[in-house]
Length: 589
Figure: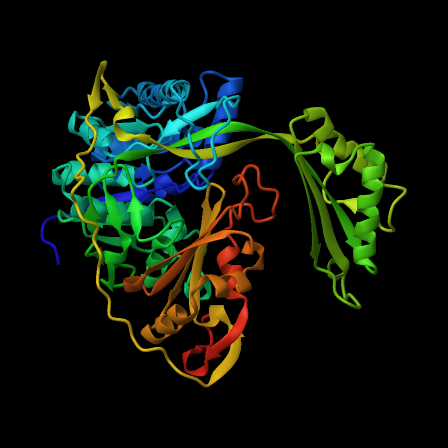
């Protein structure tokens, strides 16, 4: 166990729209040193871009400001630092709002702004000089005619470190990595050097666990029935020690649970393998060890770090066009024939063809049952989604659907009144050299630039050695995978990420025995045409896969019902396969 006092970092937001009361809960629930919040995601950046287009003073997360209206005074009184990426596309405007809150209460607050993530000019200059902005996953070149509306680099933690060192009470950032808002306070408090790779790696891991809020305390958890109370699950805390190890916990007497399984699930969330790249360090997730530290306390230790990468991830938001959809309700008998008639009549009413749109997606969700006992047992949903560059053409789908309403299948109606459609953006990830991105801090009228993290071109990749248990033998019983395995899934641009973990060594050995591309393609036929990048984290008894391109051009452009792959893990767990009978544990699915 490490020595020295830990820094208690409490997170109060996992996304733009999270529980508004969480900041007050974290401030009042017990002793904390730092209050953090993560508001940004690829979809959120598109939403903020639309806000800024309507109002040049917008472009940040207003819900962060709402939370600070409630807790800023108490944080100042108690010496609680506040660090958040809620600044989004306008961190200076967000900082002004924080200062205004303090001024209205007769207080003074030192608000620092960390910026430099807006690299639109650098991006444009590089393209002018012949750089093609190749897509991070596909290698596809960004067309010369495409002009991104937003280009944001994923900044690291050292701007936050220096802002706190200069006396900031509140640090508002633009686009930084999700973990940076936790790594920054830890590196500042413990006086880490920029090449303290292992300590930084441990803080990145702790940040990855708590930045998604209640994900770490029982939310979105495969074995949720084991959580004693899911009503308003408490938000997570990380007690981060001088060596970078941590204890993940929550305030006493709050709902939810912190267990090795809940922490494992979050460590697997939206990662692309054992080497977790951040601007400040490459964290080797396959070196992390979890251990029980008491009720609702999980110790995270052993993390190793490799030197920071020589490139910085950049996300460009480009116009994707317009999308529209309409959903027909089909009741009773002859569901498939009714869906076919609805679609045929819709296209006749449109006076154009499917080829006039960039994409047309149809989805039939069967919820009907034979001899229905209730109306709900008789209903299915048929959705048609279109995308295209022509706003009027895309919007015409709604009018055409309505016009078929009295001349189509029996019992026809819609889930909601059809709309005119909405604009969407496409997230385009690429890489820039680290020296092309400069991070800046502004505090009290002074601005300075943050040096890039050191790198080591001669450093060797860490390759942990593992001893695997023998594979259990039969007999086998047909059972759902979720009987013995947990899962957590999500999105990374157009890719779906899926992590699966076992709860025993024998179950882990069995999982490894069949975790290969052939089996995954059979279990997830929707991925039949997708590249699979397989990985594993043996110390967490976990295997994973990144399914390249499963989500098309990303969440905003994806017409599928589960556009962010949030349910992909539970879909896999519902699949029935032959499972060694000795592994089957009832009551854990």
